[in-house]
Image (cartoon, rainbow, N blue to C red; front, side, top):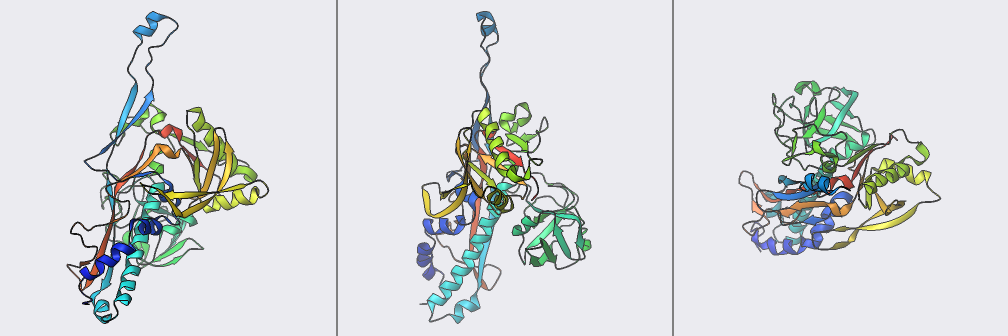
Length: 422
């Protein structure tokens, strides 16, 4: 068998990367990506998501007043648009030729490269699903720059940083990029929450307090702010920490007219430490219930989860929640949850590494949809081949992509929570 004939491996890769195997690879250890309801028919220019935020007001004990005050139902439609996210796996042609006579060795090398690219894309999606769409992956702490070493304000955000990753900086979230020239990460200390770059931060103007992006994850350039969100508009976008200003358009909607269009926010940073997480999540669920919601799942960072488990050691109950694709439950991918009782029933609290350290989200799962054009993570293979010869390098490559966005059909049923630092 000719090792460099990419067609020879396509049949094998179709089996290795069947829909179920891709789901197992991409959803494992990524609870928000795994548990969100999904659909894969996001075609056309946009996807309308109708939100009703007010009933007709033709009601009164006086008939004349009821008739004269009659109004239409208050509704607006978010016109959800797609963003793209790519990951490319490469393997040198020399490795292919060197494996001649041992096709399984080459196939194993190819699979390792594709699995890595798939993991990189899935990790990026999980991160974006928690954030606002600007592409920010972390913030440099005050006094957090020493030559080429940066310290993050939240050490937990270090999960978004990797060796060989190119990063750029801005002074505000989504703001002007200090330099279009990136710095390359050369070392990561996951205990301290620090990363080292190929050159001093000063070479690109980076300073303490700067927001950090992977190169290409913001369309802001040196001298200009971002004109649109190029990353997924995640939970932070749908559930902002303050009311949107009038005239601001979010998928074509001015959300300032009613908080039913932008959800709820609870500042629980001052809650008593012994029961802070549980009390905050129960209070948030009650806010949702007050507005007609039936929340059933909550996400917090591992730092908050371990604090809750320690403080509730004698009373916590555990449950298992399984991942879902657009078709079915994924039995092989599950997440242990701490079960708490709220106004309208049980809530599964799940720890997520990509959840910002001091944030929590109490959600009504059925109101959310992760919509994509095709499978959530897919091969770009319009020609039918998963493996291509690189056009500009002595290598073979596989191209992976996500095309879609996150949508919410009833933001008011969902609550963003500010938790105390642990």
